[in-house]
Length: 307
Image (cartoon, rainbow, N blue to C red; front, top):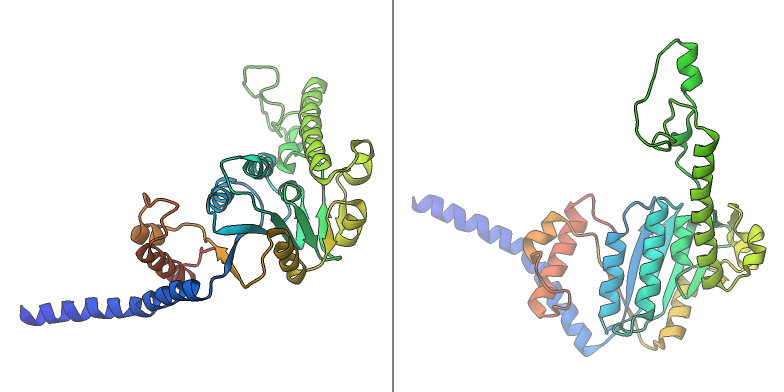
């Protein structure tokens, strides 16, 4: 029995030793922050197709609540996605910037490759947009997913396949690909898109100080290069990380070194060690160490961690 107790103790000791370097590194970071204070800038990575606003709005709120974070950098590389997601994040940024209970801080968007449709919807809520001259910017418009408008009713008829939908409400089946939409249904869908488009265009015009009378020039669904987008006023500058850091320093009045604050998407692993009920403003040494341990382990072992 004592032999198994010894093995058990050795096992737990080995696990503990795996955490020691990470705990020491966390303590070292805390010490360096005291001795050589750095200005914190929050980083939000928006990458890929947009379908859920919650992870981004949570990060935004957390950064605005934190008085030690003096600015926010949005690293954008998105072709767009769900219209509601883009607008929700845009509205969240505008609301947080105007909320009297939160700390004011500049937001800079840095694009590397693509900032289109819903991605640009989000970007135009920031205070400054930087993108390379060869990046792709714009696609300001509205459309339904193409799968909604596959015309398969002729295919069914050609192969003598019967299909008779049963529905209630004259417009209930207007996006059924197995039937042909009526003129009234098509008019309804076009009206929905027109409304979404007008809302999008008005938000861009207000944020970027562009004339709605000229929206056929910059809001006709076209994709522009970064150079063209700058000439149209859709972005502020052609550049890269260097330019973004320079603008952040100027707008947030930062003179010393910058500490980039990145918060990966929460995983079950980090929740196991840090707990779901921990307050957002917990800045204790132990909490910081645990957070660093979990984040490091996630980056090392979890393939779904946002880098």
